Length: 111
Length: 114
Image 1 (cartoon, rainbow over the protein chains, first blue to last red):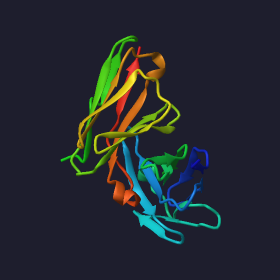
Image 2: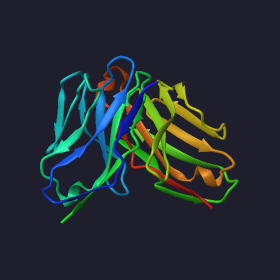
Image 3: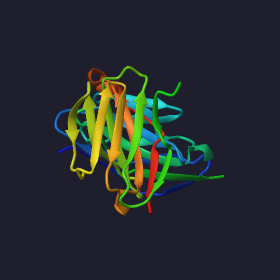
Image 4: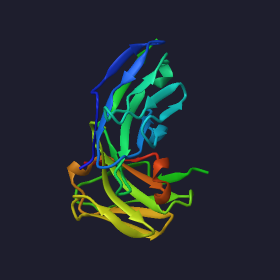
């Protein structure tokens, strides 16, 4: 079946540090891939997406590239801020019209 | 004008009670979902409805019963609540022929069973 694996957290960084959160997927076919963000006490918000190989999704300084050869969709940001502290979820569509989520990675950014 | 709204936001109840969570979307989407998020933040699909028809029903106790009166609403009724049902429940919606757009989520309902 489909699955998504992402690095365990928490990830603790200082402000302006470089961020990478790893995500790999297994799927039949070529799923669309997503990153969602969950701020404390809130629901999930779509951060960025990519629908086919080599697509790059980007939003709010975050980027992720759909790598078919490595089945990866790693999230990156060049300079994190305290306000980026949240839980980040990698997800793929299953073709059954529901998202499969990774386990989430908590990011803590210290001033 | 919230896109996906669910009520209540918090629900505290005793074991054995029956409770409902309501969800409404105003995005014109044809598919709605219920997800459960446990204390470790893991998200798991419970149900999915497309045009009021149940299309995904994961391994969930039959104490949980979704009801979709129309495409814009998907409610979740839970009978005989147990301690292990404590979690955050998220409603979401999407448009199936635009699945690559992803799903939109409500703010969640934190259910605490005491």
